[in-house]
Length: 113
Length: 111
Image (cartoon, rainbow over all chains, first blue to last red; front, side, top):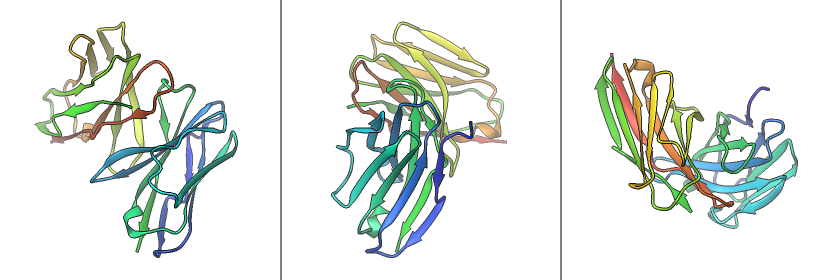
């Protein structure tokens, strides 16, 4: 398996634009997590899915953020409209179970100007 | 939600020395995991220790768990420059409570 795949690796956009981040988890992993990392706040859990169903989205900062998982091999995190304070590295991770070790993707570095 | 807190926040040592990082948590756990993050990369799982285990080894890594003190330590022996990274602990409990990382320990190994 190629591991968790994220795209794009880097995204630079202007304030107000829509941003879509993509993730392909490891095949067979039932759990998918979206994290955001900044120097100020560290790693924040935004949302996680179990078998494509969102279980807890309490970490999603605002209504501007939304996440979907239309099938077991694909998830998106969308920010609309984007703001400069959304600039961060966004990681996707997957695991077999909620307490199993997580496999992280390489992350998407988002810069909102 | 569960959250481990790593200590110290930053650690700088010479190559060949041992590095010890600690993690404290507040509630009962099912297991505790340690991760490493190299600059600009995603986190990599290092080792998992279950609540009924007291010590675990993996290569140059040694993890201990003291559930009575709600703490864990990660020891890296004979450190190398390549061990320079941030190290995070992650605690998990029974049920589907969200799993939250602490702020991490930044380890610098100087050649």
